[in-house]
Image 1 (tube, rainbow, N blue to C red):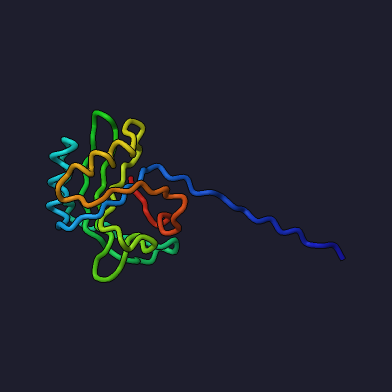
Image 2 (image 1 turned 60 degrees about the horizontal axis):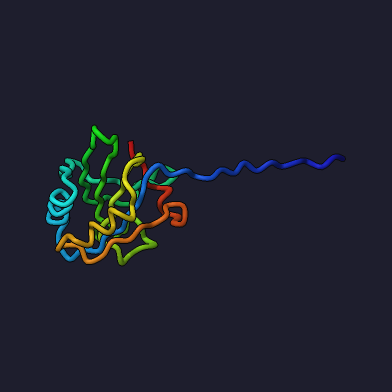
Amino acid sequence: MSKIKKHILAFEQEYDFDMIGICSHHNDYRLAWGLNEKFEIQLSKCEEDYIAVSKKGLKLSNHSLYAYKDGENLIEYYLIKNKHLGKYLIPEKPAIDFFLFLYENHFLKPAEIVEQLREIPSVLGGYIFNPEEIDSTQNIVFG
């Protein structure tokens, strides 16, 4: 009797966004206004919330979403509230109030963004996160 060979297919998720955590004591609309002023962008509230979905397609939670597409630099900005009705977008980071995602960013440096974030009065702190080190970022999809 011959042995059956098993092959395991493993792949690494590649992320096409930069992830910046923001701590703020203000509401989402006030933070979005501050970001718009500082970065000269136009984040606006989306009609529908961001819905986090599991790999199996199950709805995990929904969160306040602001978006802006920069046609000149080809960057998409997404500001998403981390906690809504006791559920977190990124449960590994419960102390973070909002996440700013820079989708397909090939132009801006996240460290410079964080430095400028700290100049906004409604921002208490900004932190760069590596999406590859946080398991729940596999549920984040843009585009």
